[in-house]
Structures are given as structure tokens and as C-alpha cells.
Length: 244
Image (cartoon, rainbow, N blue to C red; front, side, top):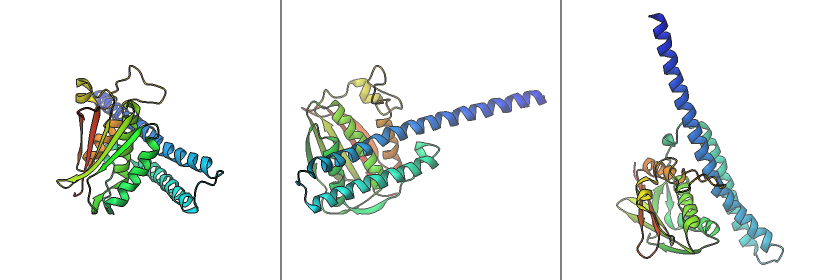
């Protein structure tokens, strides 16, 4: 009897250790996935400085704005590293809403978009009036960067970003002009590890991006919706609830 209890306890402990190992592996993969874009944005700003400062094509104000943007990205990376080191599951990420001026926050989003979409024609449609919105700007930016990275990867030549506020939610719609989603992708793209690649490519596309976005949007009392845009390609709408 005592041996059976010991065997059962060991089996239970092993299952729990296996679960924790898988959760940590998933968290580390998500962490690595989402580090790439802030680093890309930093590289983009650094490239601008390296190219145009020697040519004296940047004013002092331009340089200070770029430095401020780079400092913001560095602070994001620091905060993200701290938060991820204390989390046990992605689903436990805290949501810290703050009231921000929509126009200023959208300017920050657009600044990031210009770097990420450097190789694509970028169009922006802002339907948000001059108002305050209550969001966790870091969470929204993280989702935004994921959606943009996907759009740039699959676009033929252009990406469209739309912003709107409806039914108490701040929404971002990112649309590319690629071939769009097939039926399987529409149903499964937000599942963990789903990928349209036959195997993981050298950029590390392991199918985490949209799953992370789904989790973060839902934590923010919002959601994510995939569709195919008329006369364009894939379209993803991410919404963020502005109340608890």
C-alpha cells in the first residue's frame, strides 16, 4: 500500500515537472519570438543615424527624436525582460491600463510601422478622434508588431493599417496584399505552434505570433479576428477592451 502511494506520488510529481518544463519552453519561445521586432526597430533607427548624420541631412531635433524613440525601445526591452522572467505562463501576463492620448500613441505605432514596413508601401487610415484611450500600451505595441511582421512577410507590395474605437474597444486592423488565408489557416492560425511553413525556417517562424496575439488580446478584454479583405489579402483585426 505504501509502495503504491509512493509510486502514485512520483508519477504525479513527474507530470507536474513535465508540465512546468513545457510551459517554460513555451514562454521562452514566445520571449525569443517577440524580442526580434524591437531589435529590428532599433536597427532601423540606428541605420538612419549612420546614413544621414555624416551627410548632415538630419537636424538636431530629428536626431533627438530618433534618440528618444531608441531609448523608448530599450526601456521596452528592459521591462519585457523583467516581466517575462517572473511569469510562469503567458496567460498570466498582467494588464496595466493607463489613459493615453490616442493621437500620441498612434504616432508611436506609426513610427514603428515605418521601420518594419520599410520594404513595403505603407498606407494608414486613422478613424480615432482626438481622445484619451485606456490601454496597456506595451501589450498593444507587442501585438501590433507581431501583426505587422506577419503582414510584411506575406505582402506582395503593400500593407494597410487602420485604427478605430468602437463598442469600448481600441482596434487595429492590419491588411496585406498577399494571397490571403486559406480555410485551414483561418480556422487554426491562432493555435500554438501552427505554421504554414513545411518546417521552421531560419528566421524562427515556429507559429507563436498569432497565438501570442490571441492570448494578449483576450487578457486585455478584447480578441483577434482573421479574414480575407476584398481585393487585397489577409486581414487581422486585434481589439483591446478599454475597461476591466
